[in-house]
Image 1 (cartoon, one colour):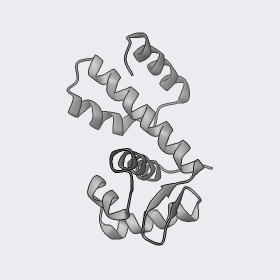
Image 2: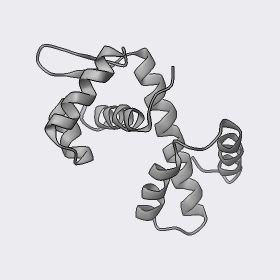
Image 3: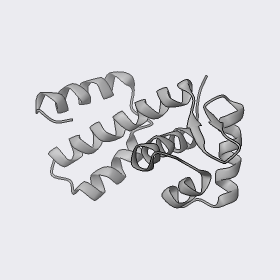
Image 4: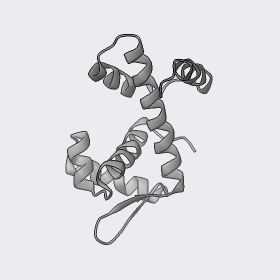
Length: 124
């Protein structure tokens, strides 16, 4: 199943917030990504309908296995690309912002070579 970049961003944000806060609600995603409450609500409904997340009655959001797989892959790409860009001398802020732009579009082959390159330098 093909998943859109925006859905990947939402899943990645849920993973990051879960690591940072332990529990995630829609309002946390609104605050993290700067999107409107209605936009986040619609996205959470679509992610839930497609089996990527579950929502408890109290509003807590949980990544299901498929959502966790996607979020972990995108977050791993983000961290690796940020590290590459900082190795090249890019500021950490710009490196992270640029990683967000690139993380979804690289082929598996290109990302694998970048990952190997970064690991050879003892980072990541």
